[in-house]
Length: 147
Image (cartoon, rainbow, N blue to C red):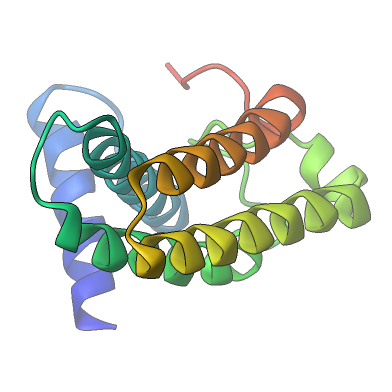
């Protein structure tokens, strides 16, 4: 919990330092979570492509992605679109949104399994499947960055 609050504070502090309006705490937290997902995906892609030699790190990144995936339903309470890229359609189509989260969770579970196997090609294929679930949700439910 303290780490979560710290990450939200850092994100909010960064916005203030750049003369941008501060995000509401839930929007800052959600943004930090999504940035974490993006960072772990970047590391997984670098491992799968062979750009880095730390294939033993794949399990940690995959497990972190899965843990973040499991938190997603919690970080979209109704009425929290303000200051974020979350579209109101999330709450208007909650069951579809939840279905997309479930698909992301399943894809990250498959990525964990592939990472434990250690085969770079399998890790790459599983990472592509995760990326497809990200795009599927973002296409419908992520709006432009707030001003």
